[in-house]
Image (cartoon, rainbow, N blue to C red; front, side):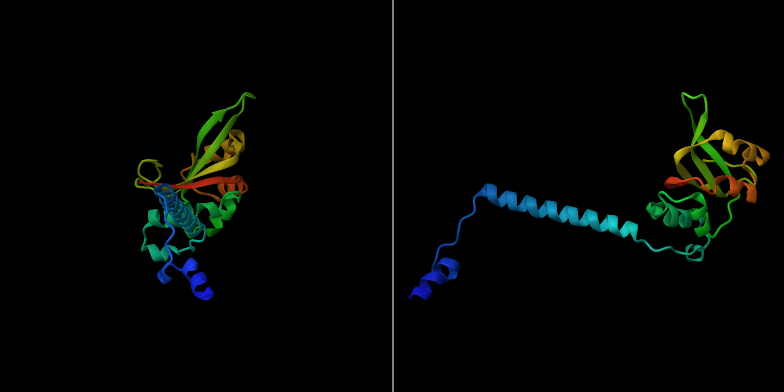
Length: 182
């Protein structure tokens, strides 16, 4: 008999009353579940973005834009804090030029470059067009003095990639990498 009374208290199917849940408690429980599920989904996407595998250029069937976007923008968090040289070691394509962009004049009278565009395909040969070409925009951290890039850049106006271009920008630190859509 004692066992039966204990069972009734623990399990309503043995004749005990089921505990009633107030409407506020029910809504709160549902909100907690929804919040937990939302955070789980968000964390899954974040983790997935961090662990996307590198895919070779051949897998993109010659689509330079898709290759650059997937490997260097979608996986861009892998390059934060690394150098442009580290990034270029992973690119299976040879850049055809670069263009320092978004300059900022500071109080010290110096012009600083905020980002650099490295392009890999021109729609019009020898002419960089930011509205038509396939390129990566690399935001720098810290900013780079324009005077460090100016002499080398002016030699070719960025329309030809040389080993000297690589040497000038290879040690610059990456803040963010973006593929610029064409």
